[in-house]
Structures are given as C-alpha cells and as structure tokens.
Image 1 (cartoon, rainbow, N blue to C red):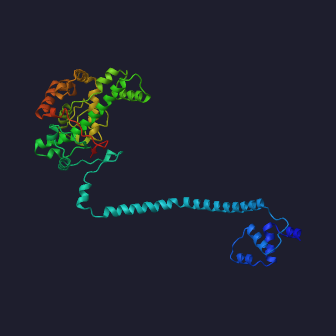
Image 2: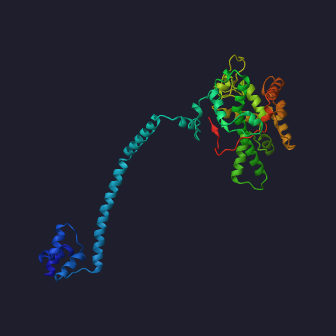
Length: 397
C-alpha cells in the first residue's frame, strides 16, 4: 500500500494530504477552506493525532529542514523579482517626480515673491552679500545718495578713520555714475575716498600676508613641496624669471595708501572720468590691445587705449602689480626697501618723487600728486587698517 502511494504522488507532502483526505481529518479540511498552507511537520502531527500511520518514507528532521529551505528559497526568488520590478518602475518615473517637485518649489518661491514685503523686511534685505562665485558682468552702479546712506548706516566715516578707527571692509564693484552731479566738492571727494580706501587696504593686506609667509619660508632649512610651489607662483606673479629671492623681497611689498588714493583721484577725476565710469579704470593705465577704451581726441600717432576692468578691485590690483614689477619704478621699490631696512614708516610723500615715469609730464606729475596728498590730508590714511571680519570677502556691492 505504502509503495503504491509513493508511486501515485510526486512528493511526500502529497502523500500526507491524500491520507488526511482519505481518513477525513477535519482540521486539515478547515485549513484548506481558509487557504492556509500547512507545513509538512504540521500535517504529520495532525495525522499522528488521529492515529493514522504515516507513509513508510517518512522524512527525517534533516529532510524536513531541506524541504522548508526549498520552499523559502522559492518565496525569496519571487520577492526578489518583485523588488527589482518595483525599482525599475521607480527609476522610470523619476524624471516625472523631479519635474513635479521642481514645479512645487517654483510655485512656492513665486508665492513668496507675491507676498507684500513689510517695512522691517525691506530694511533687513537692504544689504545683500554676494555669492562666492558671483559673476560681475551684470554689476549695477549704486547712485551717490544710496552709497552715502549705506556708509552712514554701517558707521563708516573718514573722521573716525583719521582718528584711528579701522576701515569697514566694504567693496563697491562700480563707482556711482552721478558723482559729478554732487555740488559739494568736499562731499564728492570724501565719498570717492570712502569707496577706494577699502579696496587699496585689501590689496595691501594680501601683500602683507604673502610677505609674512615669504619670510617664514626663507627662515626654514627645508621647504615642503607646497611651499616651493607657492614660491614658484610668486616669482611668476612678480615677473622674476631668474627666481632671485632678493628681487622678490623688494617687489612683494605694499603701496602707500596716500599715494594710491592721490593717483586714483588724479587719474579718474575723483571718480568722474569716462574711463572710470565705463571701465572701472581708477589709475588710467594704458594698453595696446583692442580690449581697452579708446580715448577721445587722441593723437593719431598714438595707438594706446585705457585699460578697463570688470570691477574696481581689479583696477587696484593691476596698479599694484604695475608699481611692483615694471622697470620704470625700480627706484620706487629700492627706496621703499631702504625704508624697510631702517624700520621707518613708508608714506606716500616718501615715495612720490619716484613715480615721475607714471605720466609723460614727469616732474610736473610728481608735483600734482604731492599737492593732492597734502591738500586732502591723505597721509592720515597711511596707517589705516581694515576691520577684521568673519566674511572672507567683506561686503561686496
């Protein structure tokens, strides 16, 4: 009987179900109606409970475990396929989900802009800091009144700076286009100085930091790869082909603030010249490329243009590089180095006589710049410093 049953049924489980049906085991019938699947061990227990003899090839515990593993494996395969199918569907609809999310975000931002801005909110948003990678191609020039009010709101005034207060790190990208319309000459000149002063101090601060690093490197017996790379870049920046360290020490130095202010004032007409307003050219530097601004009523024999810049700070940097690298200002650098060796303060009046090559009029140019320094008490700013700030780039507008 047992052998016949083994031949009729494919598996041991089928044999157990057949015996349960044959002997009318009620529990198994009820489980079948509820669609509950009983394990082989549960079927065996129910048959034993009703004193029904199990088939001859009764499975061992090992066989039962093997059978359960097989059943679990099949179930896991189905679950895996279902999960893969779900992931595939999710990936395929991802672009749609992203577009919906973007639309929701855009709608939210649009609604925020539609909301009326309170007076307090306007005051809070009056000054905005630029992003780290801001593109200055679309910079907007503030008018003189707005610029003056901004300085007043931030407590930035020249009287305090002359008395020893530190200068607020406020960097305008363009000059106010209506500076010329200011009737009060004193007010116009003070506003110009306020705009240019932080730009000059910032460049000098960078030079001072580089100079300190240079002497630190030179004081070491062994330099790292990074320090050697840094030195190589400084040689290139200061145009020293033979990598002469003595030249680098002489060229890597600050420009007297009073001298830079006076030259900027003279070359730009206190910020009102066409070159200053159209090309941020504070120092009237020449170029023979087509990128510069062509002077009006220029001598036909001369082909130069006035160098233009995206922002004012770039003009200050180019001026600094000019005085620190061009052969025409070798005496300027040598005198500055001598003052350094004697631990003397370096002022604009100390070095003004060595910039006669800056303009074609030579000694007359020196007299003009000296007069601008003295008449406007610009030597008061030679010891000025920037106010320390947590912002790496200060306030750029």
